[in-house]
Figure 1 (cartoon, rainbow over the protein chains, first blue to last red):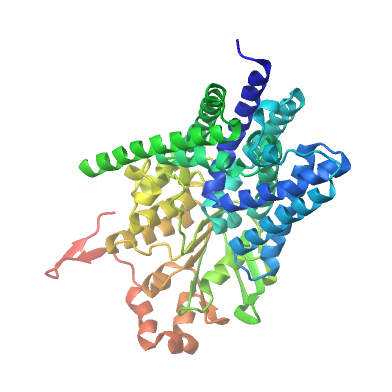
Figure 2: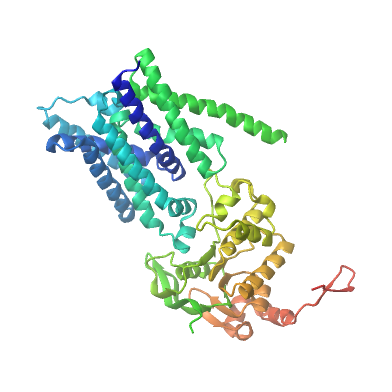
Length: 269
Length: 247
């Protein structure tokens, strides 16, 4: 039989995959991969905050990510710097701030590898509760703002002209990004979380011709990556977080073959 | 009874201390077509966007009296990363009834493209989808920014005819931007001639006789009215024989 810790890892991993599927699609559509990375880097600062003040890690990470995200939106308004420069600026300054703060917390033993690459096998019941409850809140919110969010992703002017309030849903979506990073940081780690967001969605893009189909395939692909990755890590004794991402990569490569076939078919017909 | 759908009072937009357009006032009533004309860079699209509330820092007073708005923007680019079919695009800002969706696609002649990917459409085809999307939701205020760009000549006439029909049938207020002075002068109720500000406005007849308009567009432009004022009940074939139109 499977061990308890492995069952918990599976439940947590699947919970994360269900949420990263739809959010990952929007991450790709809105070209926010680097934005996700920046938020993930800032998570280190969140973790040190949690350790310093004995807060829940997910909550502290959400708090810091949300602050960084809002700060970024405002920076974009007041400076003339391009978006990627601002993202780099924030990513590295929050990472550096986090590392400096950690050095002051010498009284705490700290598993930095677990933080960078995730430690899904040490997930406890409270983590599972946070993932599934937080995940449910994220998905319900996304469902509510889906129409205006998608409309403003396709075209800002159209959405604004026809009364969809794109600025408001943009901020809500940014908070959802901060939330998914907060709940999944323990599972895949801050270096790999963006991979969990964009790889299943990228795979899905190769296989779909409409938005809902892409969301569905991304979700299934993400769940499949978690299953494959976790069983592989059990079998080969490889680290769990990276194994999940490698599984996602394999699925992406498989989808390329299919893409090629579709294109060849298209030419023949 | 108030049948005004949008009203601009001394509206304008200033970016980096330059006025893109300034002191614009007009109103769009239900069942009426208001047209904006003017040379490149005269602020036509900007004015339309001000009327739609896209610019939040616009000066002056802008009032919209309806939430049912349809918009055909002048420029629109859709990211290739988005897997969007025509049917998804039609439902973009409002979930349409299947019948309304099909009717609108039929009216603009692109029903056969319903399940095609947006990326695979030609410029003219996409333009027809844009118009279909804007009219399918039966708007009370319809803003068309050069709606027939890229459409073939025959389609152009049909689409302008369609726009006129929509304003009559739906009783919606239409704000139209067009370079086609013939159409503007023959089929619209009120013309606003822009050149960074309102240079003249009024019925097509008064605008055509205004000397500002003649200066802006040249003498030949004012003749367009006299040519197109009469109603066509016939067409000419290539050898000059007259064919009576079947109505």
